[in-house]
Length: 172
Image 1 (tube, rainbow, N blue to C red):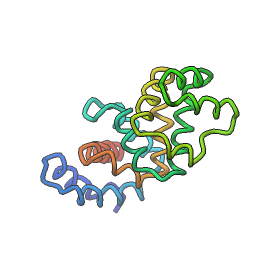
Image 2: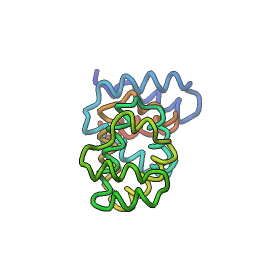
Image 3: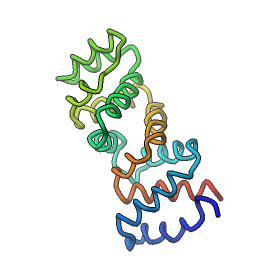
Image 4: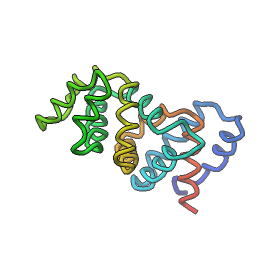
């Protein structure tokens, strides 16, 4: 039996509203542990871009808030890299994040301690700007979460069900 076998029943229950959040999380743990990383990345990109889920930046802010300091730093550095050379001016214009612009100009990136000081709302604002400048940032962020699937459960049961549905359809 492959990793996608038996997923159909959990998906039907989830989409029908009869699966508990614990059931969905348990099913996701099994799927995420066995699904090829590339397929998980593509499915996450689909979920982040879906009109059936909250906006990308809102989901990212929530996931950022649930991440460890090191994960926050890695994620923030990836999002900021999506801003390219305009990072300093964009951050300066977002209020309260201008100090990060200096860090980026130093070429060091954001540390775990610095990332811990950034609010999820600020990450939402940065993610929105990064997506405007570079729509491919969604793929980059999806790759990050494919490597850290334990964090993905924070996007909510509906988004997880959509993610697993997408993974299941890729296996057919």
